[in-house]
Length: 89
Image (cartoon, rainbow, N blue to C red; front, side, top):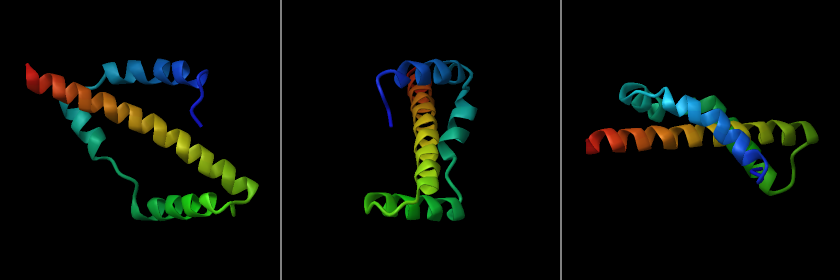
């Protein structure tokens, strides 16, 4: 899903958010996880995606989840960097 042209756009979205993080908000962000119902849906879609059994609507839904997860993962990376830097000071 990640393309060369989408990476700068994603960075442009995430960098200002990363700059807003405090150590406390970074820890809270890192603690966020999908609830069990959502995780079960993601697991089902991922399994059926691998086997090529998604409908077009499910493929679009799965693609959105992958995009959102990428965004959150990058933001969580910024949170880890902030915490690492603040503990080094």
